[in-house]
Image (cartoon, rainbow, N blue to C red; front, top):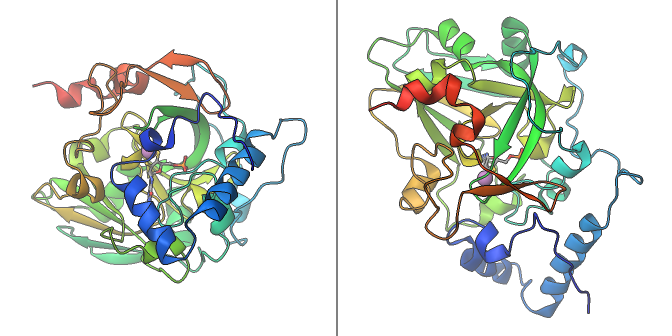
Length: 328
Ligand SMILES: Nc1nc2c(c(=O)[nH]1)N[C@H]1C(S)=C(S)[C@@H](COP(=O)(O)O)O[C@H]1N2
Ligand SMILES: [Mo]
Protein backbone atom coordinates (compact mmCIF):
# COMPACT_ATOMS: atom_id res chain seq x y z
CA UNK A 1 0.00 0.00 0.00
CA UNK A 2 1.22 3.47 -0.87
CA UNK A 3 1.84 5.82 2.02
CA UNK A 4 1.30 9.49 1.40
CA UNK A 5 3.71 11.75 3.24
CA UNK A 6 1.91 15.03 3.60
CA UNK A 7 3.66 18.29 2.91
CA UNK A 8 2.96 21.22 5.21
CA UNK A 9 0.89 23.00 2.61
CA UNK A 10 -1.29 19.99 1.96
CA UNK A 11 -3.68 20.51 4.81
CA UNK A 12 -5.94 17.56 5.64
CA UNK A 13 -8.47 16.86 2.95
CA UNK A 14 -11.51 17.37 5.16
CA UNK A 15 -10.21 20.82 5.87
CA UNK A 16 -8.79 21.65 2.44
CA UNK A 17 -11.87 20.83 0.43
CA UNK A 18 -14.80 23.21 0.67
CA UNK A 19 -17.99 22.32 2.42
CA UNK A 20 -19.94 19.30 1.21
CA UNK A 21 -17.33 18.29 -1.24
CA UNK A 22 -15.77 15.63 0.92
CA UNK A 23 -19.10 13.87 1.07
CA UNK A 24 -20.14 14.66 -2.46
CA UNK A 25 -16.85 13.59 -3.93
CA UNK A 26 -17.41 10.16 -2.45
CA UNK A 27 -20.78 10.14 -4.12
CA UNK A 28 -19.25 11.27 -7.40
CA UNK A 29 -16.58 8.59 -7.26
CA UNK A 30 -19.23 6.00 -6.44
CA UNK A 31 -21.03 7.10 -9.58
CA UNK A 32 -17.92 6.35 -11.58
CA UNK A 33 -17.43 3.04 -9.78
CA UNK A 34 -14.21 4.31 -8.30
CA UNK A 35 -14.63 3.97 -4.55
CA UNK A 36 -12.85 1.58 -2.24
CA UNK A 37 -9.21 0.78 -1.78
CA UNK A 38 -8.28 1.07 -5.41
CA UNK A 39 -9.35 4.71 -5.60
CA UNK A 40 -7.77 5.62 -2.34
CA UNK A 41 -4.42 4.21 -3.33
CA UNK A 42 -4.79 5.75 -6.79
CA UNK A 43 -5.33 9.23 -5.34
CA UNK A 44 -2.63 8.71 -2.75
CA UNK A 45 -0.34 7.64 -5.56
CA UNK A 46 -0.88 10.86 -7.51
CA UNK A 47 -0.19 12.96 -4.49
CA UNK A 48 2.96 11.08 -3.60
CA UNK A 49 4.26 11.57 -7.11
CA UNK A 50 3.59 15.32 -7.05
CA UNK A 51 5.08 15.75 -3.61
CA UNK A 52 8.30 13.99 -4.63
CA UNK A 53 9.11 16.40 -7.46
CA UNK A 54 12.03 18.70 -6.78
CA UNK A 55 12.88 21.79 -8.78
CA UNK A 56 15.94 19.94 -10.17
CA UNK A 57 13.81 17.54 -12.25
CA UNK A 58 11.32 20.23 -13.23
CA UNK A 59 8.41 18.56 -14.99
CA UNK A 60 7.33 19.87 -18.35
CA UNK A 61 4.55 22.40 -18.42
CA UNK A 62 1.11 20.87 -18.77
CA UNK A 63 -2.23 22.37 -19.69
CA UNK A 64 -0.97 24.81 -22.35
CA UNK A 65 -3.82 25.82 -24.66
CA UNK A 66 -3.56 25.50 -28.43
CA UNK A 67 -1.75 28.50 -29.97
CA UNK A 68 -4.05 31.42 -30.76
CA UNK A 69 -4.13 34.72 -32.64
CA UNK A 70 -2.75 36.45 -29.54
CA UNK A 71 -0.05 33.96 -28.48
CA UNK A 72 2.70 36.29 -29.65
CA UNK A 73 1.60 39.10 -27.33
CA UNK A 74 3.32 37.22 -24.45
CA UNK A 75 5.35 38.02 -22.45
CA UNK A 76 3.85 41.46 -21.90
CA UNK A 77 5.61 44.35 -20.20
CA UNK A 78 5.51 44.22 -16.42
CA UNK A 79 3.70 46.95 -14.49
CA UNK A 80 6.03 47.48 -11.50
CA UNK A 81 3.42 49.18 -9.35
CA UNK A 82 2.54 45.99 -7.44
CA UNK A 83 5.68 44.66 -5.74
CA UNK A 84 5.70 41.36 -3.87
CA UNK A 85 6.91 40.78 -0.31
CA UNK A 86 7.74 37.13 -1.04
CA UNK A 87 9.28 35.03 -3.81
CA UNK A 88 7.23 33.96 -6.81
CA UNK A 89 5.82 30.45 -6.59
CA UNK A 90 7.52 27.87 -8.75
CA UNK A 91 5.54 27.60 -11.97
CA UNK A 92 5.45 23.80 -11.98
CA UNK A 93 3.97 23.76 -8.48
CA UNK A 94 1.26 26.32 -9.28
CA UNK A 95 0.41 24.41 -12.48
CA UNK A 96 -0.22 21.17 -10.56
CA UNK A 97 -2.21 22.37 -7.56
CA UNK A 98 -5.46 23.90 -8.73
CA UNK A 99 -8.97 24.53 -7.58
CA UNK A 100 -11.13 24.05 -10.66
CA UNK A 101 -14.06 21.95 -9.55
CA UNK A 102 -15.39 21.61 -13.09
CA UNK A 103 -12.56 19.09 -13.55
CA UNK A 104 -11.90 17.59 -10.12
CA UNK A 105 -12.16 18.20 -6.41
CA UNK A 106 -8.65 16.84 -6.11
CA UNK A 107 -6.28 19.75 -6.70
CA UNK A 108 -3.50 17.48 -7.90
CA UNK A 109 -5.64 15.90 -10.60
CA UNK A 110 -7.01 19.04 -12.27
CA UNK A 111 -4.01 19.63 -14.55
CA UNK A 112 -4.21 16.03 -15.75
CA UNK A 113 -7.91 16.28 -16.63
CA UNK A 114 -8.00 19.54 -18.60
CA UNK A 115 -6.72 18.09 -21.87
CA UNK A 116 -10.18 17.78 -23.56
CA UNK A 117 -11.06 21.38 -22.63
CA UNK A 118 -11.23 23.56 -25.79
CA UNK A 119 -10.30 27.18 -25.15
CA UNK A 120 -10.58 28.47 -28.75
CA UNK A 121 -12.70 29.74 -30.39
CA UNK A 122 -13.99 31.50 -27.26
CA UNK A 123 -16.61 34.17 -26.94
CA UNK A 124 -17.68 36.36 -24.03
CA UNK A 125 -21.21 37.67 -23.94
CA UNK A 126 -21.84 41.03 -22.26
CA UNK A 127 -25.47 41.54 -21.20
CA UNK A 128 -27.80 43.26 -18.73
CA UNK A 129 -27.69 46.93 -17.78
CA UNK A 130 -25.15 47.98 -20.36
CA UNK A 131 -25.31 50.55 -23.13
CA UNK A 132 -23.80 48.23 -25.72
CA UNK A 133 -24.73 44.57 -25.11
CA UNK A 134 -22.47 42.50 -27.36
CA UNK A 135 -20.35 39.40 -27.77
CA UNK A 136 -16.56 39.55 -27.97
CA UNK A 137 -14.18 37.03 -29.38
CA UNK A 138 -11.45 36.69 -26.73
CA UNK A 139 -8.59 37.46 -29.15
CA UNK A 140 -10.40 40.55 -30.43
CA UNK A 141 -10.91 41.71 -26.84
CA UNK A 142 -7.27 41.10 -25.86
CA UNK A 143 -6.04 43.13 -28.87
CA UNK A 144 -8.39 45.97 -27.99
CA UNK A 145 -7.40 46.05 -24.32
CA UNK A 146 -3.65 45.48 -24.56
CA UNK A 147 -1.76 43.43 -21.97
CA UNK A 148 0.46 44.02 -18.95
CA UNK A 149 2.05 41.75 -16.37
CA UNK A 150 1.48 42.09 -12.63
CA UNK A 151 2.88 40.18 -9.68
CA UNK A 152 0.09 39.40 -7.23
CA UNK A 153 -0.34 37.37 -4.08
CA UNK A 154 -3.18 34.81 -4.13
CA UNK A 155 -4.82 33.56 -0.94
CA UNK A 156 -7.23 30.63 -1.05
CA UNK A 157 -9.89 30.44 1.67
CA UNK A 158 -8.41 27.02 2.50
CA UNK A 159 -5.25 28.76 3.82
CA UNK A 160 -2.77 27.97 1.05
CA UNK A 161 -1.31 30.79 -0.97
CA UNK A 162 0.98 31.58 -3.87
CA UNK A 163 2.55 34.54 -5.65
CA UNK A 164 2.12 34.59 -9.41
CA UNK A 165 2.94 36.74 -12.45
CA UNK A 166 -0.41 37.24 -14.18
CA UNK A 167 -0.85 38.87 -17.59
CA UNK A 168 -4.05 40.67 -18.47
CA UNK A 169 -5.90 43.99 -18.47
CA UNK A 170 -7.70 45.97 -15.76
CA UNK A 171 -11.40 45.19 -15.26
CA UNK A 172 -11.92 48.96 -15.21
CA UNK A 173 -10.70 49.29 -18.81
CA UNK A 174 -13.20 46.63 -19.87
CA UNK A 175 -16.05 48.34 -18.00
CA UNK A 176 -15.21 51.64 -19.68
CA UNK A 177 -15.31 49.90 -23.06
CA UNK A 178 -18.76 48.33 -22.63
CA UNK A 179 -20.35 51.27 -20.77
CA UNK A 180 -22.74 49.99 -18.10
CA UNK A 181 -25.87 52.03 -17.43
CA UNK A 182 -25.96 54.27 -14.33
CA UNK A 183 -28.35 51.79 -12.68
CA UNK A 184 -25.75 48.95 -12.84
CA UNK A 185 -24.41 48.28 -9.34
CA UNK A 186 -23.05 44.72 -9.68
CA UNK A 187 -21.24 42.52 -12.16
CA UNK A 188 -22.09 38.83 -12.40
CA UNK A 189 -19.66 36.48 -14.16
CA UNK A 190 -20.34 32.97 -15.41
CA UNK A 191 -18.03 30.06 -16.34
CA UNK A 192 -18.43 27.75 -19.38
CA UNK A 193 -20.86 24.83 -19.17
CA UNK A 194 -19.54 21.81 -21.10
CA UNK A 195 -19.70 18.62 -19.04
CA UNK A 196 -18.45 16.66 -22.05
CA UNK A 197 -15.11 18.49 -21.75
CA UNK A 198 -15.01 18.91 -17.96
CA UNK A 199 -15.63 15.66 -16.15
CA UNK A 200 -16.42 17.22 -12.75
CA UNK A 201 -19.44 19.01 -14.21
CA UNK A 202 -21.21 15.67 -14.43
CA UNK A 203 -21.65 15.83 -10.66
CA UNK A 204 -25.15 17.24 -10.51
CA UNK A 205 -25.05 18.01 -6.78
CA UNK A 206 -23.58 21.42 -7.78
CA UNK A 207 -25.39 24.24 -9.59
CA UNK A 208 -23.10 24.40 -12.65
CA UNK A 209 -21.95 26.55 -14.30
CA UNK A 210 -19.83 28.32 -11.64
CA UNK A 211 -20.83 31.96 -11.12
CA UNK A 212 -19.50 34.87 -9.11
CA UNK A 213 -20.19 38.55 -8.55
CA UNK A 214 -18.70 41.82 -7.39
CA UNK A 215 -19.80 45.43 -6.96
CA UNK A 216 -19.13 48.02 -9.64
CA UNK A 217 -16.92 49.86 -7.13
CA UNK A 218 -14.82 46.70 -6.74
CA UNK A 219 -14.72 46.21 -10.50
CA UNK A 220 -13.44 49.77 -10.91
CA UNK A 221 -10.66 49.25 -8.35
CA UNK A 222 -7.26 49.30 -10.02
CA UNK A 223 -6.33 45.86 -8.63
CA UNK A 224 -9.25 44.04 -10.30
CA UNK A 225 -7.66 42.24 -13.25
CA UNK A 226 -8.92 40.13 -16.14
CA UNK A 227 -6.20 37.56 -16.68
CA UNK A 228 -5.30 35.85 -19.96
CA UNK A 229 -1.70 34.85 -19.20
CA UNK A 230 0.59 33.48 -16.48
CA UNK A 231 4.39 33.22 -16.12
CA UNK A 232 4.89 35.13 -19.36
CA UNK A 233 2.74 32.95 -21.62
CA UNK A 234 -0.92 32.34 -22.32
CA UNK A 235 -3.01 31.14 -19.39
CA UNK A 236 -2.90 27.37 -19.00
CA UNK A 237 -6.20 25.52 -18.97
CA UNK A 238 -6.01 24.57 -15.29
CA UNK A 239 -5.53 28.23 -14.31
CA UNK A 240 -8.72 29.23 -16.17
CA UNK A 241 -7.93 29.74 -19.85
CA UNK A 242 -8.63 31.72 -21.87
CA UNK A 243 -9.78 34.43 -19.43
CA UNK A 244 -10.39 34.60 -15.68
CA UNK A 245 -10.89 37.21 -13.03
CA UNK A 246 -8.24 37.97 -10.37
CA UNK A 247 -9.19 39.95 -7.22
CA UNK A 248 -6.05 39.63 -5.08
CA UNK A 249 -7.58 41.09 -1.88
CA UNK A 250 -10.34 38.47 -1.80
CA UNK A 251 -10.25 34.73 -1.18
CA UNK A 252 -9.44 32.81 -4.35
CA UNK A 253 -12.96 31.50 -4.96
CA UNK A 254 -14.01 34.97 -6.17
CA UNK A 255 -11.44 34.75 -8.98
CA UNK A 256 -13.70 32.93 -11.41
CA UNK A 257 -12.08 31.01 -14.27
CA UNK A 258 -12.89 30.49 -17.97
CA UNK A 259 -15.54 33.22 -18.21
CA UNK A 260 -18.20 33.12 -20.96
CA UNK A 261 -20.72 35.71 -19.76
CA UNK A 262 -20.62 39.02 -17.90
CA UNK A 263 -23.89 40.58 -16.75
CA UNK A 264 -24.49 44.04 -15.29
CA UNK A 265 -27.19 44.09 -12.60
CA UNK A 266 -28.86 46.46 -10.15
CA UNK A 267 -29.13 43.84 -7.37
CA UNK A 268 -26.47 41.85 -5.55
CA UNK A 269 -26.45 38.42 -7.22
CA UNK A 270 -26.10 35.12 -5.36
CA UNK A 271 -22.84 33.28 -6.06
CA UNK A 272 -22.03 29.59 -6.56
CA UNK A 273 -20.62 29.24 -3.03
CA UNK A 274 -22.89 31.68 -1.20
CA UNK A 275 -25.83 29.63 -2.48
CA UNK A 276 -24.33 26.31 -1.34
CA UNK A 277 -22.86 27.30 2.05
CA UNK A 278 -23.60 30.95 2.90
CA UNK A 279 -22.17 30.72 6.39
CA UNK A 280 -18.74 29.69 5.11
CA UNK A 281 -18.35 31.42 1.73
CA UNK A 282 -20.06 34.76 1.58
CA UNK A 283 -20.38 37.25 -1.24
CA UNK A 284 -17.62 39.56 0.06
CA UNK A 285 -14.83 37.08 0.82
CA UNK A 286 -12.32 39.77 1.75
CA UNK A 287 -9.13 38.23 3.18
CA UNK A 288 -9.15 38.89 6.93
CA UNK A 289 -6.89 37.09 9.44
CA UNK A 290 -9.19 38.04 12.32
CA UNK A 291 -12.31 36.38 11.00
CA UNK A 292 -11.85 32.61 11.19
CA UNK A 293 -13.55 30.31 8.75
CA UNK A 294 -16.16 28.34 10.77
CA UNK A 295 -13.88 25.29 10.57
CA UNK A 296 -10.35 26.75 10.74
CA UNK A 297 -8.29 29.84 11.54
CA UNK A 298 -7.46 32.36 8.81
CA UNK A 299 -4.61 33.91 10.82
CA UNK A 300 -1.86 32.24 8.82
CA UNK A 301 -1.26 30.57 5.49
CA UNK A 302 1.29 28.35 3.77
CA UNK A 303 2.81 29.23 0.44
CA UNK A 304 2.77 26.39 -2.08
CA UNK A 305 6.10 24.60 -1.78
CA UNK A 306 6.80 25.67 1.80
CA UNK A 307 6.06 24.20 5.19
CA UNK A 308 6.34 27.45 7.09
CA UNK A 309 3.16 29.20 8.16
CA UNK A 310 3.28 32.93 7.47
CA UNK A 311 0.86 35.52 8.86
CA UNK A 312 -2.13 36.37 6.70
CA UNK A 313 -2.57 40.09 6.09
CA UNK A 314 -5.80 42.10 6.09
CA UNK A 315 -7.04 42.32 2.48
CA UNK A 316 -4.14 39.99 1.65
CA UNK A 317 -1.75 42.93 2.05
CA UNK A 318 -3.66 45.21 -0.34
CA UNK A 319 -5.36 47.45 2.28
CA UNK A 320 -3.86 50.63 0.83
CA UNK A 321 -5.72 49.95 -2.42
CA UNK A 322 -9.06 48.63 -1.16
CA UNK A 323 -9.72 49.43 2.51
CA UNK A 324 -11.72 52.54 1.55
CA UNK A 325 -14.25 50.35 -0.26
CA UNK A 326 -15.35 48.71 2.99
CA UNK A 327 -15.45 51.55 5.51
CA UNK A 328 -18.85 51.65 7.19
N1 LIG B 1 -14.84 28.36 -12.63
C1 LIG B 1 -14.12 28.20 -11.51
N2 LIG B 1 -13.34 29.22 -11.08
C2 LIG B 1 -12.61 29.07 -9.96
C3 LIG B 1 -12.68 27.89 -9.19
C4 LIG B 1 -13.49 26.83 -9.68
O1 LIG B 1 -13.58 25.75 -9.10
N3 LIG B 1 -14.18 27.03 -10.85
N4 LIG B 1 -11.95 27.78 -8.00
C5 LIG B 1 -11.58 29.05 -7.35
C6 LIG B 1 -10.67 28.86 -6.23
S1 LIG B 1 -11.34 28.24 -4.81
C7 LIG B 1 -9.36 29.26 -6.27
S2 LIG B 1 -8.36 29.20 -4.90
C8 LIG B 1 -8.75 29.69 -7.54
C9 LIG B 1 -7.56 28.80 -7.86
O2 LIG B 1 -6.84 29.27 -8.97
P1 LIG B 1 -5.58 28.49 -9.52
O3 LIG B 1 -5.96 27.06 -9.71
O4 LIG B 1 -5.23 29.17 -10.80
O5 LIG B 1 -4.51 28.61 -8.47
O6 LIG B 1 -9.66 29.65 -8.65
C10 LIG B 1 -10.99 30.04 -8.33
N5 LIG B 1 -11.79 30.10 -9.55
MO1 LIG C 1 -9.83 28.74 -3.18
